[in-house]
Amino acid sequence: MNLKILILGAGYGTRLQRDILQDTSQKYSQLLGIPKALLPVGGQDALITHWLQIFKAANIDVASSVYVVTNNPSYQSFISWADRNSIPRSNIVNDKSTCNEDRLGAVVDLLFGLNYFKLFNNDLLIVGGDTLFLRDFNFNKLLDQFSTFNDGCLVTTYIIPKNEISKYGILTINKLNDDNGLFEVTDFLEKPNPESTNSRNACPCFYLLKSEALPLIEEFLKEAEFKGAELEDKDATGKFLAWVIKGKHFKFYAIQINGRIDVGDLKSYVEAKEYFGD
View 1 (tube, rainbow, N blue to C red):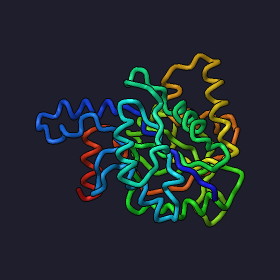
View 2 (cartoon, rainbow, N blue to C red):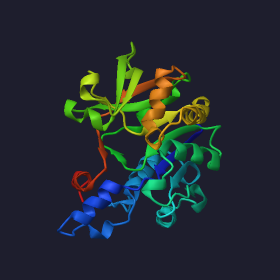
View 3 (cartoon, rainbow, N blue to C red):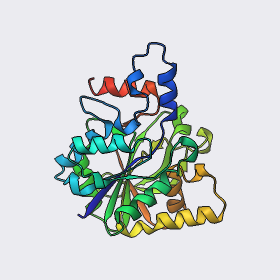
C-alpha cells in the first residue's frame, strides 16, 4: 500500500488558549502558544508523537510518509518537533496564515498540503492534529480493512451520548453482510441538531482516502467558492465528507472504534493527560 499521512496542524486552539489564560492556578501557563498537536501527553513530547509510534508499529516509514500542514506562528515549533522525531524538515509546510481570523480552513489546508507535497498519486490518511484514539485502537486492522476494497474510503466511528451530537460530525451507517465489522456510510451531518438525527455515530477527523477520491477535494472547494461559501464551510473536514457522501461521489465505509480523545479545551487536555497516565 502506497500510503501517505497528512496531519492537519494549522488550527489556532482558541478555546484552549483562552482557558489557559483564565486558569487562576496558572498550572498550565507554560502551554500558552503551543499548538494542540504539540501538547505533551502521556510521556511523549507531543500529542502527534503518539501517532508516530502507532505508524511505526505498523511498519510505516514515518520519515518518508508523514507530512504536516501548520501555520506561521507554529511553524518553528513543528520544525523542532520534526528534528526531535527524525522527520525531515521538508515534510513540514507553513500555510502562511498568521492568526485565527485569517486561517485558511482545514479543507483548504488539506488541498494545500496535497499540492505542496505532491501526494495525489497516493492513498492518503488524514489525521486531525488534536485527536487521539483510545489505547485499544487497532491501526493494523484498519489498514487491512482498507486494503481489501478498492471502491471506497474508510473512516472510523464511535457512539456518543445524544446531548453531545451537536459537537461532532455524525454518520448514518448500515451494517454490511460480512464478518469484517464494516458499515456502509449513507449520510453525514456536521454538528447537527440532536433532534434532526437518530444516529449517535460520531466521526473523528481520521480518514483513509483512496487516491482516486483526492481530486474531489478541489472539486468541493471550487463548488463552495462558486456558491460564495463562508470560512466555516471550509474549516471543517466534515463538510467535505458530507458533500462527497450526499452527492454519492465516492463510497465511504466505516469501522467502529471504542472512542477518542478530542483536545479542544483545557478540560479535555487534562482528561487526556489523566487517561494516558501523565
